[in-house]
Length: 208
Picture 1 (tube, rainbow, N blue to C red):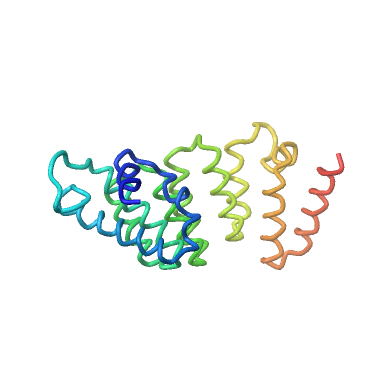
Picture 2 (picture 1 turned 180 degrees about the vertical axis):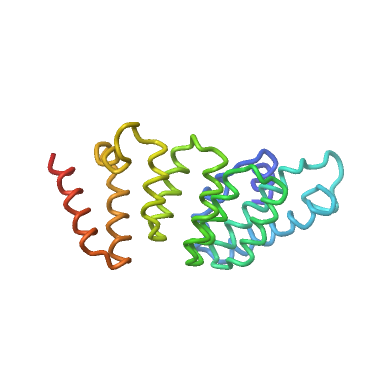
């Protein structure tokens, strides 16, 4: 595990946590991962090596970045959101131009139940690459979860055809996730008439 982690952190592998997530049912393995990676972080900050007992070629600054990104995901998974925020904030402080970091910060706030703050950071991620349709869609979904329906429509309009409303275009493309999220948002707001109207829109699209 030690060698595997070091290799992936050195080369910069954003999906590393996803690769290891299946191990998180085993508390012993989680403890091993946590001890290894927190030790890496401590050592990299002080001497640019994975261990203070090493010598040779030092690790580049990006290695510490990916270690902190991993630890943010690790502690978020464990429900230790304050620690997760500490690590992701440290990563952002060193590299404030990496979309993955802001995306992760938004996820942490979502898991904390602070949807407005989650939207703020997902919007920050979206602003770093306005041509990224995946991040754009994620930002719209977060806005809908926070009952920000108008803002979500405006976000989606960036990728819809000119000359038609965002909602008409989304219906044409059969973006059912957007419509169903809208329905849920209207229900949470107590706007049951709008929710029912949206249900009829979905029905018309499905029955075409």
